[in-house]
Length: 137
Image (cartoon, rainbow, N blue to C red; front, side):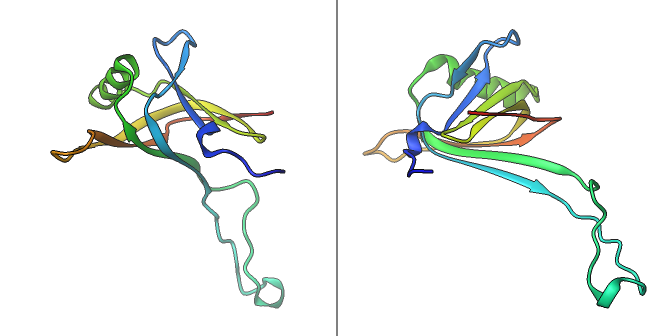
């Protein structure tokens, strides 16, 4: 796999619940993280004293974080609305030359910042809120 352009990692939100996904505009940096908890079932009978994990158990989760500048009134308002209403709409994360991850996420934090001689910026974090699907590109 060749080097990828960071701007091609896109986070899209369902704008109205009908599957109309739009890129959250103004993001400059984006991070996606996948996690799976392990369930330790090690006992005195474990071979050689090695840890044993229960296959298929534990909680899977994903998180998205990003930062950027205000560029698009529609997606800016949608992100703010999702936070204050506690909604968990569909999101798509397009990872170049890898695939598309899709499913419900909740906006868990939004931070706004700005200096008197610079642009207004924001940071947001999302947490998975249900089953995710993966489609390879």
